Length: 485
Ligand code: GDP
Image 1 (cartoon, rainbow, N blue to C red):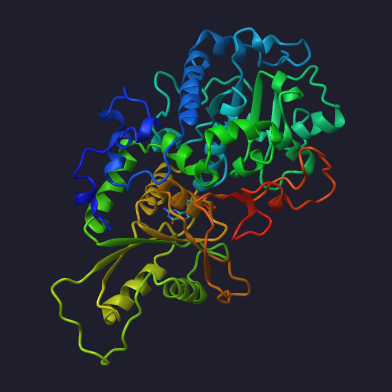
Image 2: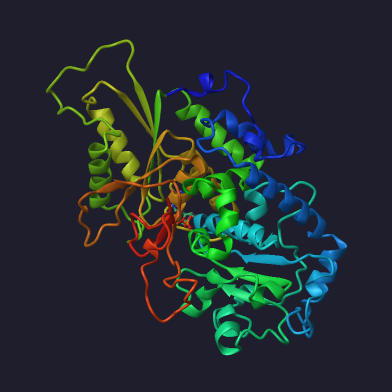
């Protein structure tokens, strides 16, 4: 495996085969231009059609985005007492500007998956994507579009939109089922795609241009999930998606490389850590530990990680003290292990293991963990910056072990184009057998997919949507989840 020095020997294609546009200020967002020197070559190049659609979306974002006359007109129509378009027809088509507002909530991994899939949905439905910045977004990411902002302006007029829930009168489920699709008197429609949304609200997965949603100028979306795999079940988008993504296993990889450029502060954290601890190793292994049973350390989780790295030959074993004298060679292979987690005990234990005992194959193993925040925090800038830097660092490794169920892990592997080894979530504090499985693709799992077929829309029958189309499958870690492969 080439280290950074050899990786960067030749001039790299910083624009990633046309995925990115030139013309951004390099100093204000160094990651956009430098990340290519920290990464392997693109494992999946963007298709010409995806590139065309991105350029079209960028133009739309610029023409209709915050600060423009169309945006002002459209946001005026959201003020209380105004009508959003359905009732009085095609007002939305006057300037062709329609909007998708994404509410930000839950952990950063969830939010990143939500943004990537909302962006795809915005492209498919010709809407401008506006992301609710929460408290920390500007500290985390550069603007992905030139000459406009994807952040929802602070004076967005829709009062209390962050409190919308699935019973709201504007919710897609309500409009589809209780109002028979009538949007008269509604200023917007609210798409509720939280992972545990009701089947009626999940009907939005099957929406197409014949439906009422298309007539609304404003759609507010709440999701904590990678809804993309659900969108792929909708026959209305099949042709377009096939052109955009001839390969279905790298949708998040391409979208995330296009959208997510860490700010200079986060990029500094990424590169300083990489240069200090990972750069010079012959090989880098990422291990992401996310425990959902509580934040204290668990022996069975450590046992599971070691069982996985041993089963998959990712880490060497150690010799018992006194068994063999240390191997003396001048050219020892080195392996740097990047560990991430809220707790430092797993890292300390593995590091101590390779300090106290020699590895069985003479490999030099160094173990590093950037932070141990102890507990998850919400919308605290430095906490989120560390989380992003760590997901990004995981994506720079050569092989990766991630924790089942964790969106943090999905982002780390997806962004890196790495097919992870996923540890299965333990039951009753025992190591599952097998401890981990090699994933079928680098795509994230959608934890709350639809369970009905769009052609039938029988929302009260549960159907196995893992067998409807060849590239949407049941996830390795969550049998009822769906992922692209
Ligand atoms: P998920 O809960 O594993 O699906 O991932 P999320 O990212 O959505 O939420 C977990 C949150 O907990 C993160 O966003 C961080 O705030 C925090 N967190 C969890 N694991 C780590 C970690 O390894 N490093 C850091 N810095 N924060 C973490």
